[in-house]
Image (cartoon, rainbow, N blue to C red; front, side):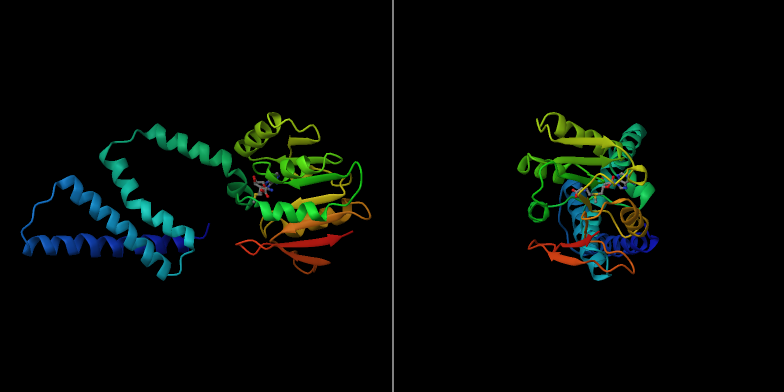
Length: 256
Ligand SMILES: C[S@@+](CC[C@H](N)C(=O)[O-])C[C@H]1O[C@@H](n2cnc3c(N)ncnc32)[C@H](O)[C@@H]1O
């Protein structure tokens, strides 16, 4: 992650803290009113969070930073006032690492395909009994399970290496009762794409160049490679599907 957003977020917090706490000190020195200390502190911290979220957005931070800026002052004071033990941070860190494993080590964050996108992919599947589909980095298994439920004539595979996401998607598959799906703990790099009719991925710009080369050299004639949102430098897609969803998803299609 770039350091600039963190510096901007810190700047927003400092400005907000100065304005809110400075303003409150000034007000209390001139006006005489009594508020219980805990209520006053909670109010000021909430005020700092709201102002920091607004200032951070004005400074150009992405929308999701507003949520971080909003809760940060309150969260830090809870940690400080309640003497939260160190193991809680270690446990939270390990949990986050298990889920966001590939964000930390592979430059691929976790976000999930929505239902409109899954429906669009369903419409792209060929009418072929025994059809093979794979989701490279299947996250919570959403696309695999959605498609397997709608196409009992096909075989749907999800592969994943983030331990937390693998366990989640495996459990969803295991207790979902879909016999034509499988979830494998496998890295994309070592997984042969030769058997598949349709390969789907929703990753990030980082792996796209090597993944496309791998797909081109391994996928069979007549197969379809679909990338959600991420193009391949110097390799324009054969077709672009615009999904009618809120994030204006684009599916990039290459036919081999
Ligand atoms: C953006 S999420 C997409 C999840 C799912 N495909 C969906 O559309 O809902 C990308 C997933 O790919 C996984 N991933 C990233 N690099 C991987 C790799 N080299 N091997 C296996 N999984 C990977 C991540 O752990 C993450 O769960």
